[in-house]
Amino acid sequence: MAKGWGVNQRVKVVEAYVDYAPALNYRGMVERLLATVPEKYLNGLDSVVLCNMSGLPQRAKRGTIPRRKRRVKRAHAAGLYHPAWRGQKPWIQLFVDQIPLPARPLRWIHPLCDLLLGSVFYHELGHHAHTLRPEFQEKEDVADSWAGRFAVNHIRKAYWYLYPPLRLVGLISRWVRGKRLPVRTRN
Image (cartoon, rainbow, N blue to C red; front, side, top):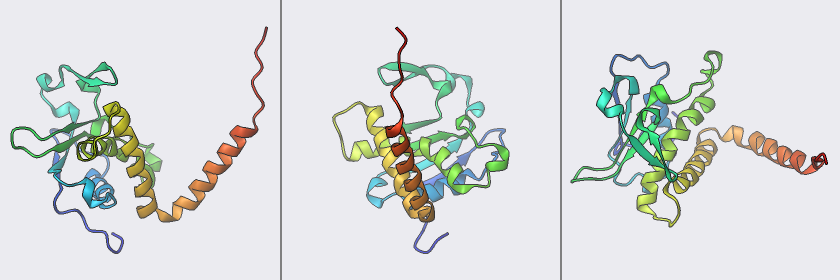
């Protein structure tokens, strides 16, 4: 790891797979993602549990969870945030078999793998940050907003050398989108 990066000792990363061999080192990826999160947003978070949806009992897969004014089947979730309840600290559960992986030849690219796992992990961490700094908006929108902030922070800290080219690509794409001719409609 880079100088100054220590794995956060207060947030445990637990692997709990049932009849599943992970394709990637998810523990190391989560530890990299945690290392770039400011300490104040991890206050109170107990652990991150990595597990597989296919290993859960059928009754745990049943039911739905609320998502943007509608219900989504629990079996389609890639991660869950479990808030503090009955004296238990809040924790995050990630279903690694539900998170999309890059193609096999691209799995060696750490920034790509970090961003795919990070999109789910940082969203769930955004739910935790929302409990620390409440905002009066839709819960999922707030979590997505936090996920974007955490992802940008991760790229800046862990892959600082990629940030200038990514900014340049973003500026060029915005410039190209601004130069497009308007689409004509047929009458």
